[in-house]
Image 1 (cartoon, rainbow, N blue to C red):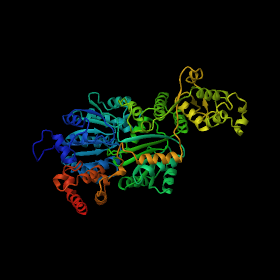
Image 2: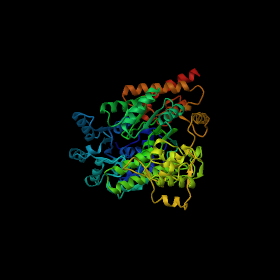
Image 3: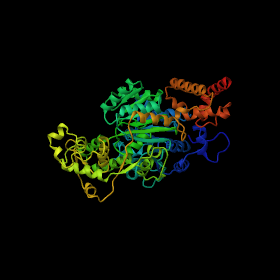
Image 4: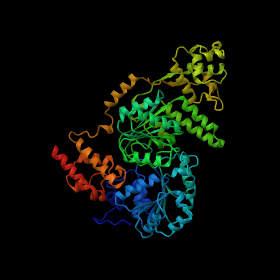
Length: 623
């Protein structure tokens, strides 16, 4: 539809659309600028963090311009989620994908030709069919929006070959504005988006990548499942979350372990039957407090706003992947956590996977550099958010006060002598043994293996008794992460010297090691008490804080769940938690007052307004 206001003339049609259909009173960041540019017919490339409001940047121009806006989206779940939310807002939206029958596809096409659609969602492979291109050529088109545009990058973690074909839009539809959007793109990926989608003349909009509501934390592996359980029970009991594991087997085992310990967890990976994956994803979207344990096959296109944590039990493959995956937490802007367990076995495994792959050497070098950047993030003694944002070329303050290294500063120690002992031990034992054996030699343990190879007779046997076995494991981990030791990828993960080892052995460069935090039940108890007494940010579980409002909060959630079941949509499509919180805080008594609440547009006001007011009035009477 071309938007026409039925109320007072608006000085800004985009603002009027925002208020009427989405229930928001102001734009965020450069949303207004992007919308005006695209609505005026300009092309754009938009980089904006997850939860920053990218969708409005193409949804509102589609309403302002004549014709239908075509949205290219990579996943069925993402299409269904966004179309459901748009319809709740009174916007005429539909999708065409493999879930529809031929008759249903025909009906959608007829709607589009009749001018009865504002937005049409399609997968790239569907759009590139000649029949689809011919159908689109017969329609008045408002714009093309290419969502998740980083999928065009052949070096990225979400590469999808069909995205490469979208360059033809520039030739087939030169007069139709195009907007490419992503939340995850470093400088090389941005360049690929521009080149491969023929957007050289497009205006580039780059927002800050910071997600200030997410707290970042990296902890050393020490029974990671138990660490995860402690984290969930301490900080996110009953909340929705995502747990990422590297392998399908680990996904299955972890999900089963969590269930056995009383948590609502479901596995998700590409090896499961499609019906099982669909059912588990649906439960995650529709039910409260479900934890999905998954490989990276899960998450892209999930718009669920109230995911309170994302945990990694294994290292992701890059900082780019880590940022994308952790960005699925806290899309509603409320406090959320990114929790990562990390150990040297992760480093060895990922390096082995890169080296043993059949990819060309250039690709391997790129992947190795990405891994090194990720290790730098894990081992940093400075603000984690600063390291993460700098990787995307984004400026950040020295401290964020919302990551583990800011809240619990890391102590360092002069590790040059320890590093020289460790490297010498690697050399004296033949440069083919792993850290466990080397630690035994350094600490003077006459194990069967040490005696078998005669390493009790080396000059480095027992020279490291000034440090504990745990401290030596930390030394080797940090030497590997820092590139001062290499891992044998073809054998059994033995450590050997490299060019960077030389200046350490000669004492030509300083070496600082981080003091690894204490991993103990007492430390867990101390942290649990500290978290309960935090005042620097509001925790989601602390809501509602006002006396007498808990009943209203639960009543609103019950109403939302019932409406969602009736309409077969996720509860957050009816109202986000942020909207329910605002209703509880404002206690509106009239439809006019309710209309001022963030997220209550004209359609939701009409459909649900009276029910909300009745619940508010009942709560007020009880108080």
